Amino acid sequence: MGHARVVATMKLDLWLVRHGETDWSATHRFCGWSDPPLSERGREQASALRPRLEGRRFDSIVSSTSSRAIETARLAYGEPRSDERLRELDFGDIEGTTWLECSPAIREALADYETFEAPNGESVAQLIERVTAALHDLGPGSHLVMTHGGVIRFLLGRAGVTDDPALASLSRIDLTLDPLACRLQPP
Image (tube, rainbow, N blue to C red; front, side, top):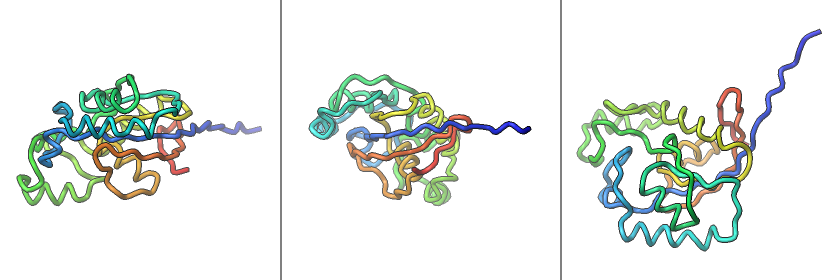
């Protein structure tokens, strides 16, 4: 008699918020692990999210360790638990530069986002691995996640959404997580 393997999946109701504007995002600079604070406009954007989130109850509120994500969480909803795995992509040598300042080869690589690897930084595959592990640790339920454009772009992509998230935007997706394989599946 054979044994059947039972795989318990977790259902995640994710409320994803991209942090508000910083001076770097206002000038379209790649900002991964650098830590510029929210600009005055960014604080206004984050505060404007509060009415949309008021009265909602979440199993957890979590943010990246970047000050821009933590401050967005505080202004939009409340005190988050921070998790460094929810940080933006480490852009390595292109950190702080703009699209126009990048070489044509880097621009071409960036255009194929899923396979991008920042020179002396991190690959999108590494970002996906750490973000998936962070989600696994959240457990099932409804979670408010304050994070960054690259993280949200990856998660929305798994739900079939191809739009890039705007600053201080709110997106809601349902995902199924296979906890044994740490893979995300669309609902």
